[in-house]
Length: 189
Image 1 (cartoon, rainbow, N blue to C red):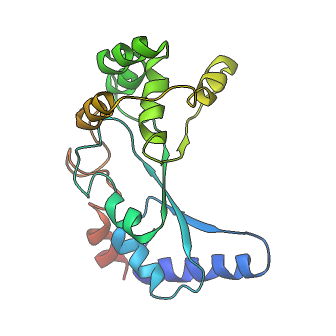
Image 2: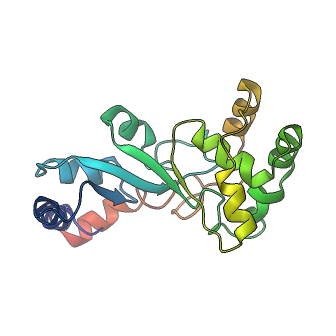
């Protein structure tokens, strides 16, 4: 993501591409509030979406761990989850949202898999998801999220979950995207 100046130059290049009719909307990935503020200082095309890693276990995390989710919600920038099943998480956390006790117990009540419960938690909050799979059975299950609703109690339990933990940053409470931003920005300016 580089320095503020580099982000602005990259964004203006994307805007030129969109204004030439090659895109209907523009988005970013792994941007936290300060990164988007850099872009907004020069933008004439709105930032439509920010793709970030977000999953069950990150609900109670602070702004550093969620890449400033609340800021994007307030600003009308779609917050989209990739790796919603924590695929890049270290073992054993990378299986927590597939066969962990919380998601499978809730899934049993709905005749759904743990993965479907974890994805539904996001979708029910209005967060689009990008789950990865090559397995036709899992691809089908990923689409079978709209025939059930999680109860308020189930949503609260999933939102309060602390596993799988946030990963990637300089601390266990940091996704890595925002926690190292200040240091990189100072080095690259």
